[in-house]
Image 1: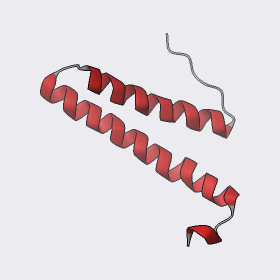
Image 2: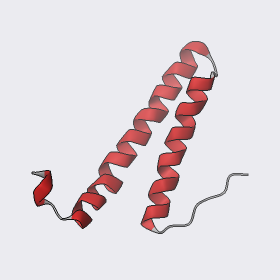
Image 3: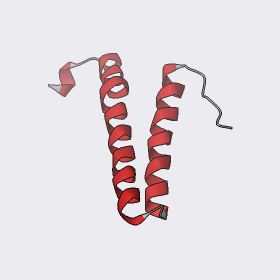
Image 4: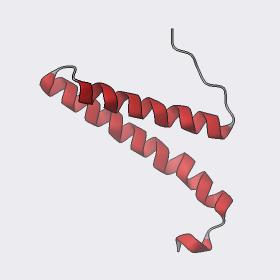
Length: 69
């Protein structure tokens, strides 16, 4: 089934469905872990991975990245 979709449609599906879902799951896992054990390297890494997915999606979409202050 995946082969029958055009590459542009596959890219669109990845950027609109898979990436936001994955970043949300990573952030949720970081929240749960942080609630149980406090801030650890693993929870901070999960938060960073979620942010990385958002930045990648914005870059591929052609949007400007926001700077954190």
